[in-house]
Length: 316
Length: 289
Image (cartoon, rainbow over all chains, first blue to last red; front, side, top):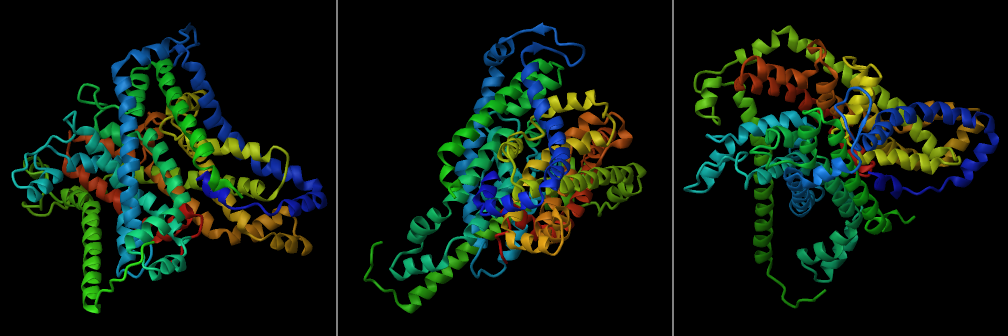
């Protein structure tokens, strides 16, 4: 969301300087009073814990007593050698890839349908489509455990009705299926969020320009391809950014639906791996090294993407 | 763009437009069904017996509507204790997030000082670390501050993680408020804090409602922190109470579904009231209609 913030221009520097001079007495007082409490809280619960995680990751530590067993690259070496960890990384990338290539286009298509225009009932559709976003992840996960029930759960009943001869699937117990099942739930929960962002972006797309293209003989597909999508560029770049980070950060739904990476630790994401092999077993040093890997991936992606892809969106 | 000389007749155009419209509605209704049906099955599940569930997980109640799934939960004082705990966490974290992020956004948007951008960038970095991932070191921090089994142990980290997003949203709004207004208020004898309290805050009310709404959702849905912070089950919020029911009755699906329905109802009602504010918040206030 930092991109949204950056899109608004600062035009007030000069004036701010003037005020600073006129009210110089209160300036630092105000800054201290207004910024310090928030920044201290942020440092206490975000910055310091993350810094400490880097330190813990170099030790073998169960969370009690001093840090004594220094293992240097040991934790990272063990991570690298552990097969479930490597598959967890693959799965996280897989979810990320599907999010960007499936979830975002679906969200965009729906935003084009209900985000503007004169379609009757679009506000009601819009409202329904956004509902899953307000459910907690726990509720979402439990509802879907029920939907994916291997007996006659909703998923099996629905596919059985639509496709003749459909065999009941164990959606969450089948290694080849479980990641797709998980992705289905994540899409259900989060596409509404991206849809809203696209709808906002569409407000900035000039209708006159699209109309002009139509007058010039462009069909709807061409208007979309050459006018609407390019004008939505900054929003699309932002949703890709949020979607990629979101995919790496997903935890609760995956944890409950896969029952901690089952079958046989074959369905972990990086985050569920961290919880299972770091927190549940009190190997906090090892868990911290997983967290550091996750931070690093997010940070590298974030810096790289903002520098290379989103740079043009910041230009004032 | 290719120009075409072929001009279809009005009748063809009308048919084509009708087809496009039908396709649009088909897609929308289909997607809405996918969105709604899992929720409906949960609600229906709360009205059936667990026995019915085990033989046929998806379907209508066949042995009469089981209102007692609901009444047994609603008559349980443990449930209402959890409601109260959830409200403490929700109200506490929302209040402090709004207070701290609006003051920070004020400084970051309207007072120029050395190091401002650096501070702001550090804060923005927080967007990269969701609570769920940093949970382990945060828990250790909570423990070392002796905040285990205290509501503050959940509220303060929730606020800390809510601050980056909220501050960024508010800063955008504050920046959009014309500087002439600030000048005018100073001429009228307001000082900086007076301008903030009497002019900026009222003007930014839609944005403040938006971040409050998002934070209410985050607080009401909070689960992971509570799981680690509260060993005392008297302090459990509703999301943890759900797990308690799951243990207490084996896997009593009917009751779990009833419990879920009870949690969904306030969320959906709240959402219907707050929808436009959520939209405002996520879109930086650009969305109309």
